[in-house]
Image 1 (cartoon, rainbow, N blue to C red):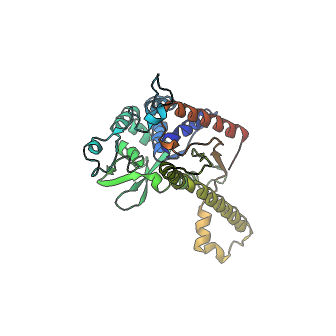
Image 2: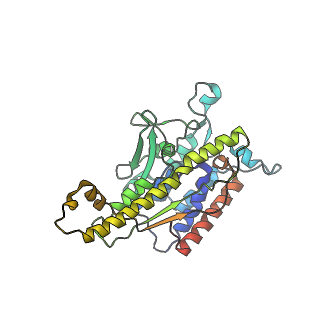
Image 3: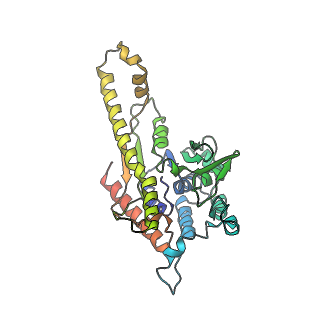
Length: 327
């Protein structure tokens, strides 16, 4: 599941539709940033996961003043006070502060809402990502090794809005800085499931919440917003192309394997052996739509926008799943 701040509401709508599928079971869940929060809830919620995510988005959302409709989007730029707040250090010394916001309310909510023992014991594999702020290295955290609230918060620590999160004395930032759609770790984990069983079929479901509106930036704020959109969401298109190419290579190697004589020296070639060790993703489903978002949508936590995105994500997912669309 992607990062994207307020755009994560679209993913929640899609999640509601996916988990309504008869006999649906997820073997692997990956997430980054807001997607990491959703992953932790889906695998470790103390209550019903969908109801818990509903509560999360209710707390993230900012309501308009009754006498001033339309003001909610503007107020939402300053934080959803149920989950985040302006950092006291930024108010006291903005020039030396390393972040603008404080995620203490979100940390408290996660501690109250997610049972991390349950998450780590879950048969569903959960992988979330973050970036080491000291080295720039992209790292994956797996519930097989044990996930904590720090890992989830680290994955959502987008600078300069949020502070670094320390894990084992190492500073971490939002994993979306390197990859905002954690497809690679999902594919790697799916390949390991019953790898020796040729009858196993693997399905990967991803969501694209970006829906970039094709407009020319008119202000400096627009320029920054479009820069972030391209930086965080533009990589998905490249990832999809690479995925299609690699799946094509796996198709080719399967045909080669059938045609090669058993004693062919090509079977011992390192590259051939590496390709043979991979497993094909049989079906890739991309839930997306044609709804377009404004340049600053990722920071718009207004209640009206949140509800609209949830509804659109649900509608797009239901359409995609019912029609059998595949990327």
